[in-house]
Each structure stands twice: as structure tokens, then as C-alpha cells.
Amino acid sequence: MQIVQRFSLLLFIVVTIGGCQSYSQPSPDSWLSRPAIGSKIILHENLEVPLGLSRVYMQLGEVRARKDVNEYKPYCYFYLRRPREELDDPMVITADEFTIQNVYRRRVAVRITQQQFAFVITGMFDAGNSQHTMATYSEIYSPNQPQVTRLVCAVWDDPFEYNHVSLAQTNTSLGNIATITPTGKP
Image (cartoon, rainbow, N blue to C red; front, side):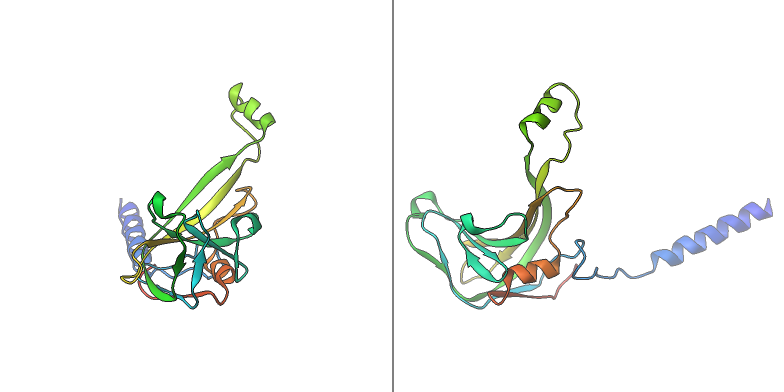
């Protein structure tokens, strides 16, 4: 009976001490890394929003038209909340500092081929390698530009070959256009 008690005590101590270890931030190259809440996004230049749109796309440090973005490589965009009637008016996101208020991730926009769709319809639910957009949403705020509400960084690919965009890939997508200054909590 004493052996069981000693083993239980030893197990309790190991679990308790293990729980005291501090959480370490993952490497910026890891897909587990993402901007921390409270961090600052410093936009270094004005960005012109294309007419009829509410997003400005960036990839490899360049502002790009939506049609010129290679979805299979990491890209980012600033999202503006604009009423539909204002979409035809010129809009500029001015150089500013934004605070990250929340960060979350989603897999969205699943695309499957016609053959894969047939498998799903017939009840064979292994649809093969469908493709997803793996996106990291950073809800941002600046009192000077409250209509700019998100920085979204994403990649479109097979989920078994790719994962969410890392912090290093986010910085590469933004280039010298914007900088994420890490502060706050992970």
C-alpha cells in the first residue's frame, strides 16, 4: 500500500512542478506563431484602396491588385468596414499605428473538384485533398481610422502540405509597408 501512496505522491509532484513551467512564445518561423494581442502594427506608407473594394492586398512587400495575388503563397490584406454606397469613392489608408485587439484563426473557402464532390454525394466522405484558405485574423484599431478593422494574412493550399501563416511569413508579406511591433500577451 505504501508503494501506491509513494507513487501517487511522486506523480502529483511531477505534474505540479511541470505545471509551473512558463509558456514560451513559439519561434516566428513556426506556424504556431501569430501576432500577440496588444502588439502594434505600424503602417509606414499610405495605401490607396481600389475603387469598389474594401481591401488592400500585400504580398512579398508589394501592394498588389487582388487578381495579381498568388494565393498559394502567403499574403495579407487590410480590411475596411465601408458602407456599400461609399465603395465607389476614393479611399486611402493613411500611415498610422494600429493596436491588435484580438487574434483568431480559421480555415475557410474549401474547394473540392467535381470528382471529389461525387465521392461526398455518394457517402464516401474522404474527398481527397480538398483545398483551404488558412487565415489569421488580427482585429485592429486606430482612433484616427476606425473603419480599418482587420489585418488578415492567409494562404490557400492543401491543409496536409501547408498550415497557417507564421509571423515570419506575415512580416515577409508586409515587407517595408508595415511592421508588427511585438508587445502584449501571446
